[in-house]
Image 1: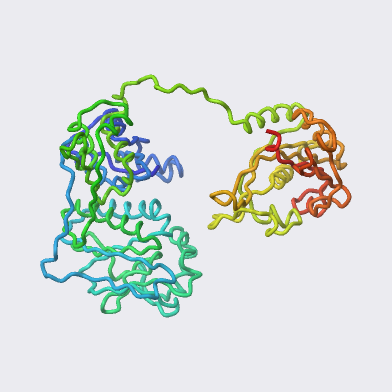
Image 2: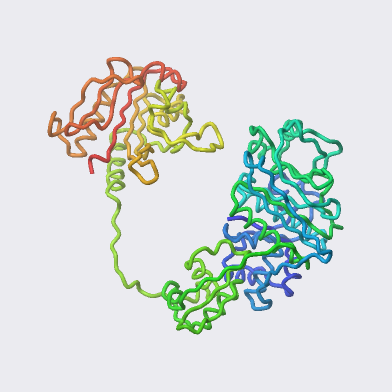
Length: 572
């Protein structure tokens, strides 16, 4: 959940009254929020950097408030205040309408076809006659950053740019050009740079370097110009210094570029609704939509019994203007553009429950009685874990994601033969694919515990992920059992004995047709002539053997190791 930090005194001043900490905590709970922490800037710095760094920091009390991840309209002080005042019936839900500029001139943003290669979508709006204070300006910048981190997915889907309209002139052009052809003075810099130079400059910037990968490999970079050729921004990296906003800004030009058209419209609507709090007028149509649902649906789903008129009042308190239609218990609900989280009837029902108060819902005995049962695969897993531990093996639990090298090169296999599910945008080389075998994780665990007394006997029972075109998601989970024995001698007999004990626990007898048996096999992961395939009722379920010296070396081990891995789902 995103956390919004607001100054307590500013918050209470905007709300029109003061609260004790307990009273405000209760108000947050009633509204579906959580007062996570009461602190100060000085206390935060002292806790993170020490008392010496905190000297001179502000003692102003800060409220850290957890906001639901889908409530983008509450990510700033102004939105939070507006929501709470409507909830407490001190303010009517605002109605947003478009106002034509007094000059009669409507600004235009022209999108060229070149942007299709990098960020094809863009929208824009103008907000006029606003008033910034230092606190409002800081809140505005913080909201923009929280939107970037939240729904914008760190600018990969959407990037927001805001500009002082009085310093630029339309119409504006959104296009894309080779990085060598782009040159401008970026925000808070003293000279011009080409786009190529900016990429090098910001590689060491603690904030902007996280966004460079979005466009740095593209043949062209997105760029926005005004009618005089002045660069407004190079999304999603940096704005131009020429059009930066300040406390004296009265008219704001907002541009949002994106790879997702729905997200970019949502972002712009939230930004506009925030800025309108500063008594502005905007030049863009904000779309409202209406939904109809029955009072009986809400009563049944929430577990209450309220008349239609009362339910409509509850929804209106959540900024969803509602009224009975007169057709039975039907309610018409108007969804404002600031509530993109309301998609289905169940979202409206949830808001009605919040406004009613979860603590006010009377507990009732469920009409349907059910008896829960453990999934058979999980029950089998738990039973095996206990007995394998009793056999002298220590259980390990490793990550479900790993590198391509772990499941391919280190095991002397090709990545194309592994049926691995790849992560499209891995954050680190250690988590590139979903594991197709449990063996690499156990070998890495052994490597991390090389200094422990020998022998090391480890096992793991967990899922692997395999591509499967027959499944609707193109992949499936498979529950595996893997064990390794690491010592001065290979200890194949120990792993073989563990296999026999496992089969005994699974009540499978040693027999070629109606039981289990092992058969010599070739596998590049294992030493030649020291690998066997496990068959149960004539079907292969796994392999065991002595690992190849190359595999042992690639996991930074120096002694022989035997391993066993098998699928346990056929035993259900």
